[in-house]
Image 1 (cartoon, rainbow, N blue to C red):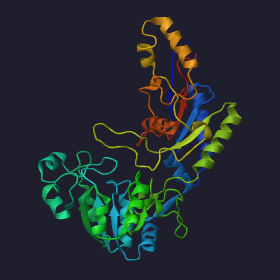
Image 2: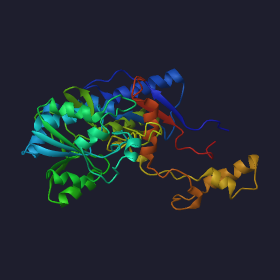
Image 3: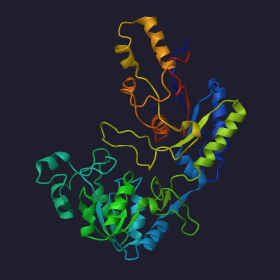
Image 4: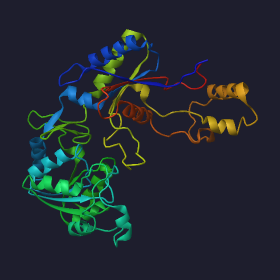
Length: 394
């Protein structure tokens, strides 16, 4: 009888740089780990590669000047509204620098009390005691008077002050507005850059319906500016700060990479191994209240065997209901048989109640993100075994 289910290993690799042969590095690192750790490959193993090293190896970068130029191309008036950016030095500050470099004035509208992914912008206790509510429109002057002394407890930074200083350092005027209704921006300008991530299509469509000239962040740098990088699908969404003047974009060649790695591993091992590229995991931190998914998707590329949803029965439900009178080995064998005989599609059945209704790549990507971390672990490849097994697999 097997005593271990899913096993996850962070795989160390060389430090990956621009133009490295990433497929070879991934395969060679896995083979080295196999020899070091003594594991064997099996069908339905999963190899996951963090999007960061995919983008680095592609050399998919843009500069602040590239951003400024594309913004100017789309907003020749040089006076725009910037709607719902996330409050992040890593994710948005360099983008904002490029916007400010290309514009004369920015009206920056942000939601409150936090941005889209949960980064705080004000003291919520003060908000509750104030005359303002979630439907209010708060001016910059009102914000400064009531909430301006607030600093994020993790970073010690007030991001409104940080963004103001950054914009003004590029000789661009800025006015902040705080509202949870994106239409508020139309009181100030009809030239709008929407920066929300997961509601981008809805927001862009809504503001266009009012006659505004609207582009989303996903529509900036979809084509190169000169010899710059680009991302045809996501533009600047999913980008990260590389230097004070450069951004690494979300990867654009992931499909080619995952299929190449899969082919090499199948040739080497004879096993049907699945491969994916992953970014932020789709989970929310209960303490910091931050929803980690600042990327447009968890997995921008994956092999076909990772398409779909889990099809699992809830063991607790079966044990407490259908087999309430059984115990020990008899109970275990009955549940195993229930698993073997389960329908190919359990959607809507009570037997699934309490299982997680999320796509496979979101679940696996979250597992990978927690395993590799975002710091100094040095494991940009994650190797997962037994994810698709269940109790009936001895």
